Length: 168
Image (cartoon, rainbow, N blue to C red; front, side, top):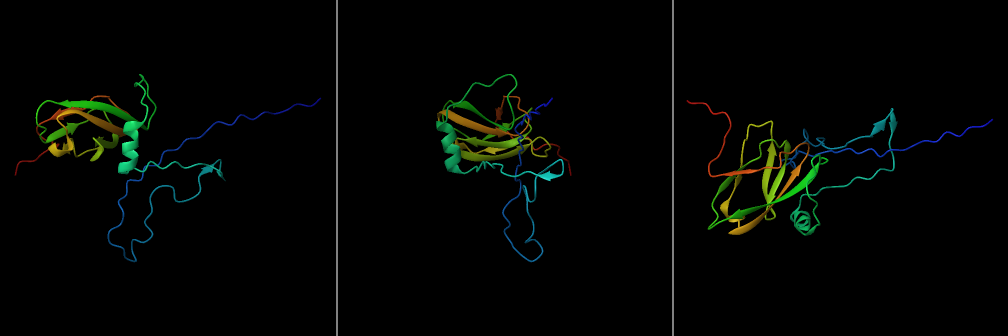
């Protein structure tokens, strides 16, 4: 009697976020500083081979392509990391604004194709500065790349939130 063993292969996904800045001053002490995946990827102590790496190069061209991309409505349980798109209507002449992302975890925000900045709920920064010239009178597009969790609401305010402050 013979039997056949069937193996089922499931895809493995890994997300690696490069938080480093390009080194501005090279010297013999920091030439070997790397970030991201810098060695073998192991599964059960065996190196994985023949995998595909997709780069999310947050360049202006890439972000512009997202504005033209087809978008789906947000589900109750979206998968992460994800890009989210929203709109902000500005009535009158745009002025400097501060963006707060309570309930969001870690990511980056773009408004009308301009990189507003990175946010991280670990702080200390509590709000992103959004310069008035980044905004249009009327409709503005907001794209958020979020790594882990989102509240799906962004607060736009006229004053900064600098986190915990100390009187001197």
